Length: 294
Ligand code: PRT
Ligand code: ZN
Image: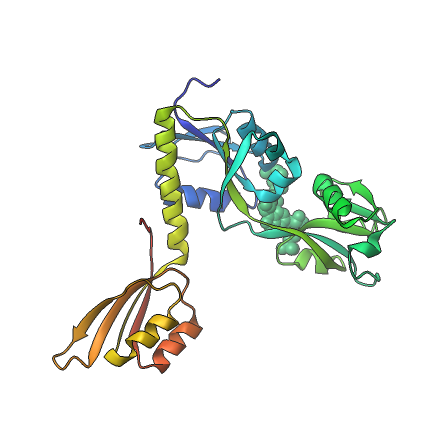
C-alpha cells in the first residue's frame, strides 16, 4: 500500500493521447513541470502526482492500486478486459482520442460483412476484442496476433483482412484497404480504482472531478450575445442549441429592440448564426467559455 495521501494519476508518457491529456489537466488547474525522463511529477498547489507511463500499462497500474486514476483509450480497457475483475471503473469519457476498432479488407476483395471472413486470417493487435466479436457474430476465422503495423499484413500475405483502430481512414486507404465492420467506437476515458479512497483523498478526487466536468462542459458551451427585434425572441430561443434562460436587456426607449445574452450548451455553428440573422438578429458575438460550474 502507498504511504502518500496524494492522488496519483497514470497518463500516457508520449503518443496520441499525451498532449490532450496534459492540456486537460492544465485546464483543471494542475500545475507541474514536465520532464520526460521522470516517472513521477508532483503538482504544486493540489495534492496530485502524475505518473507518465505507456498507455498499455495504465489499466494494470490502476487495477493494482499503484495509481488511483488513469487516462487511457477505452479500446485499451476493452482489450485488457480488466473491468471484468471489478478492480477498475470507468468514470467518464473525455471527448478526445476518438477512433473506432474496425475490420478492413483489401479493396479488391469480395466482402460485404464479417460473415464473408469465415475461414480467413485476420491480423490484429486486439485479439481479445476480435475473438469476442467473432464469437458474437458466429464467424469462425483465424486470428493472427501482431503488435504493430497491422495494416501491412494483407500485402505481406500473412493475413487476408485486418482488425485495427481507425481515425481518419488515411492509413487504410494508403494500404489499399477498406473498412467493412466497426466493432466499437472508442475515446479517452478517465478510469479509477474501485477501492475506496481515504476520506482526505476522496475530497480531492471530488474536487478534481468537478473541475474536469467544468472543463469538459465548457469545451462545448459558448456565450452568445446579439441584438434583435423583441418579437424575434421566441424564434431565437428555438434556434440556439441548448440555450438556457437568456438575459434580455431593452435597447433604446421604445422597447422594440433588445440585447440577448445567453449560454448555449452546445457549439454554435455558422448555420445557426445564419438562421439568427434571418430572423433579424444583428451584432452577433459568440465567445468561448473557460469553465462551467453549475
Ligand atoms: O507508447 P505507447 O504504448 O504509450 O503508445 P501506443 O503507440 O500504443 O499508442 P498511440 O499513442 O498510438 O495511441 C494511443 C491511443 O490513441 C490509442 O489507444 C487510442 O485510444 C487512441 N487513438 C486514436 C489511436 C488512433 N486514434 C489511431 N488512429 N490509436 C492508434 N491509431 C493508429 C491505428 O492503429 C492505425 O495505425 O493510427 C492508424 C490509423 O489512423 P488513421 O487516421 O490513418 O485512420
Ligand atoms: Zn501502447
